[in-house]
Length: 394
Image (cartoon, rainbow, N blue to C red):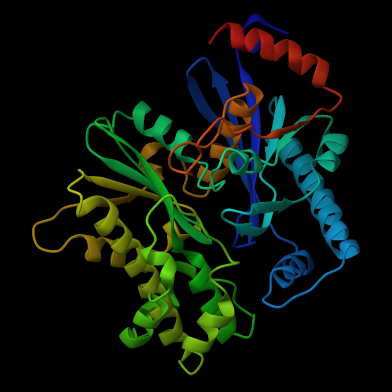
């Protein structure tokens, strides 16, 4: 081990979100307080496995323990194969793997469940794995989400943005944001659906042939039904104050399908997209702008950052009159929007190895929350040595 490698820690973060469309992986090299993204990649979700995950969460579904265990195993095996493939493709040093797992249930105040047994990854790669990032925050009185704000604030601080009032906003299946300003405390919460409604509308109207509205083209060709937008926005979740988090368990797609049932594919996509944009804009207005907190820039990431129709609507809704809030993507911060969450969980892996809590006031945590769980692999003895040396440089 060279002197320079002793002072570096390379972590591969892997993330599958609520959209169940792909697994993203990013290798992040940490050195003292600095970090750099070295490699990134994405692999599509196997269709049959995706269908099983979504069916497992469907309203009214009932499963025995054998079904749960098989899904836990099969996701773990798939994650292990993906990890092996990423390691081979990236061809760079990796000390430890952080895997978020597939969320199949999230109930604030009760618990959260991410499937995909990490032991399969550790056994297949020989790399120690950190997983189950959210449960410890529940034990501390938090909601286990959002967990990415510490990474978002670190990124904004590195880019000298905290004097402006900025947010990093993830548009995955669920929409969540981190707001930071040097004179105000960090604010972060799930605003509601992001791609969840849009993807569901597109899948419903295409009989499953399409998974998402690529580039917002379907929505751009349709007309918004404002009365149905208001029906979607009557959900009581939108009126709850932070801290708050949500998921598929609350925003059931069956309700969306009922509201949009008789619309054309284009109008359904347009209505779902505008309802999403409206829910996000209202969240900023209620929690930030009406409180007169400074907000200059919003950097979007996640799959929804590639939807210009959605971003354009959010920008228009937030910029009436002379207001000027700049809407951008995290590419301007040097991080591809698709890589952001995987990079964040690489950071949370580092924090877990250091024994640091992952949540905070924004999750509702009232005490120290145990971080992610460690599954040692063959490299564990060497990793312990490296962690000791790495910590000594911090």
